[in-house]
Amino acid sequence: VLQGYAAEMDNPLMAHLISPELQNKKDILFGNMEEIYHFHNRIFLRELENYIEYPELVGRCFLDQMEDFQIYEKYCQNKPRSESLWRQFSDSVFFQECQRKLDHKLSLDSYLLKPVQRITKYQLLLKEMLKYSKNCEGAEDLQEALTSILGILKAVNDSMHQIAITGYDGNLNELGKLLMQGSFSVWTDHKKGHSKVKDLARFKPMQRHLFLHEKAVLFCKKREENGEGYEKAPSYSYKHSLNMAAVGITENVKGDAKKFEIWYNAREEVYIIQAPTPEVKATWVNEIRKVLT
Image (cartoon, rainbow, N blue to C red):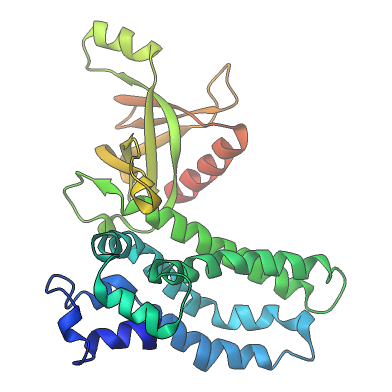
């Protein structure tokens, strides 16, 4: 892909086949695939080769390189832009010619999906290795490597949702790390509100997608997906946010193990939040508690 497509975009002999709108879009189309390739070729593959005789110790290899795996997050974040560019130009003569020269049965988009598939495959490989390494020397490292890879997958997944937020004025990066995101039913109760509004609000929940950052929690409304592939990825309209410095939490709401409360400015605003399961609620309550303490 890097030689037969990316490099060809800079080849003067191929220039006449590339439409002007596609020129200078190489970075959007291929993201940081070259960085991923060099990481594997120069670093990770060589490390792996050291463990050919001791496969059960391979967890160490993952742990040593774990920071480098974050390059996948960058690739996945760029993927929607890459896909939309590909859809505009997929029938371009340039791509057809490259594919013909390479003698590939599949078109470029199948290969651009590889890094996304690869990062999700590692956790399956590590789980499988753990299954056969119960009491051996490297088992702890394998378990830790699996946990770390799952952490990276969660970060990739969370960031894919976060880049789909629209309508937020500020800079999301200033809110600190994104810790959790998910969909909930939310009831609100405002002290100041008109009594009629309060009554209505009590009964009918709103469906909201929450993004918990270190410094704020964002409430968004999920917009329905249409289109295909990454176009199907949902997008979220920003509604409002609460500064974590002024948030309080009530962990148990009587009558429902899935509900908890977030309140703001000494209960001036109260949000009753219902998670899909008690487990999801517990995870969120723990994360919020960590932020608050």
